[in-house]
Image 1 (tube, rainbow, N blue to C red):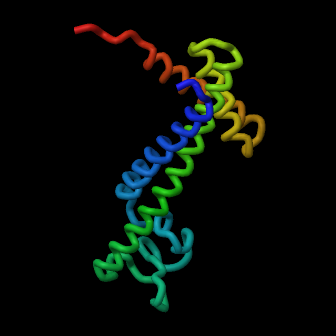
Image 2: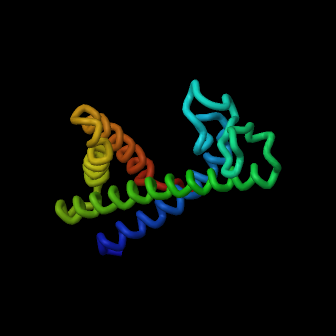
Image 3: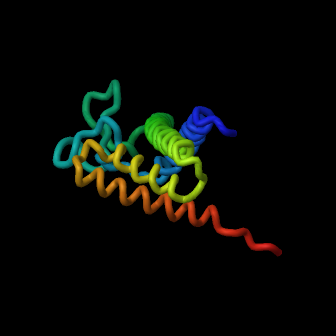
Length: 161
């Protein structure tokens, strides 16, 4: 597989799939508070912990007081929303990193850890760009360190039995 376009697309698709699974898992571990229930008001307003606005119901109600079918529908909708969000984010990060790394590999004509570290730095900076220069620098350093650690682990010689 030599094509940067194919590597980038595959990383985006695999990141999307992994993000979807991760989002479902994290949604299943969430507890129902106003911070986690879509449509519920923020802190200090509305129904209190566990309250949720339900279409067709005049006021906010406790989620646990709804019939099981509505609770499940609400839970699955929340799980779908979180999964979709995580999938998009993971897919974007995977495609961005793979594309940049492949570009560095082609530019440098080498396959070494330097490509991953440089791609991690640039990816981290791009992802944190809206936070300003300091956030971009921290994103660069963090993602580069993470990329170096993963790359070092992946390049370790395998133990023979």
